[in-house]
Image 1: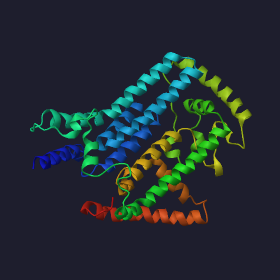
Image 2: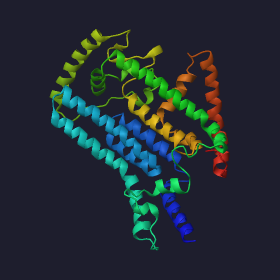
Image 3: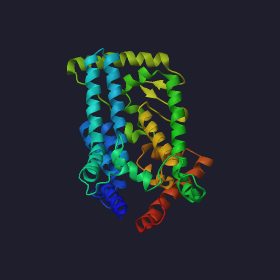
Length: 352
């Protein structure tokens, strides 16, 4: 009886954070994640930090969004240290990125501290729960493993085949996205150096280059550089634009680099900024397939932009043949997901 009460208490502490934001937290997680990424790559870093932190309040995996802030900080630090020869600016960029990333992690830490204080420190029982004695006491991880059977390959059972089938469309779309953009990134690294890519990003020369690409919605904005005065900044930009233009002209390979443009296969444009999105999606796809309840993939991956980039590429009018047939399948799946999901999920049917 005591263990049952403790189990209920632990699960209530897990759900209280989610319930505060609405009937279910997944849609809010997607809203804050996509909104935070939009503002981050638009240059509004404070707003982005707040929204990404709120995504971590809605879902625990929102803490992973701190990786995007770290990636931007690394780009700024590289530009400051290598291009501008200003090591102090590089340190400032890294410290600022670390502080902003910590803010994104704060909701996750706050929730773990809340559970630990209420159950392990101020609990009514003398018997501590197993996770209270762990070196890193994580309440949510314990509940997932102990009560929900979450763990590496623990869901690989014959009786779970229908759930793997349910998750197969979104997992297939995720794998397609990862493979496609990894190939484009590989072509990008072969055609031009990473150094040139970073300089192009921090100079804001990629804005016009991606207006026709399927990643333009998120990435067609300028990432400004670190703190410096206007006169020196304008001089640096003019110098770098001249140097970068001549370097791009000399290093152009099959028109892949031209006036700051980075063009992949079939005119698909793939900037270096796509890299953190693909790394994030790869990690989440691996976790969803091998660790989690696989049917949760349908909503677990719903806030990942590459999923929609890949879908839009399949649905592009210029595609024909088999790609066009796959486009019809994508439309049918998305419509069915909305209609069936709206009916099955709130009625506790095994949809996700």
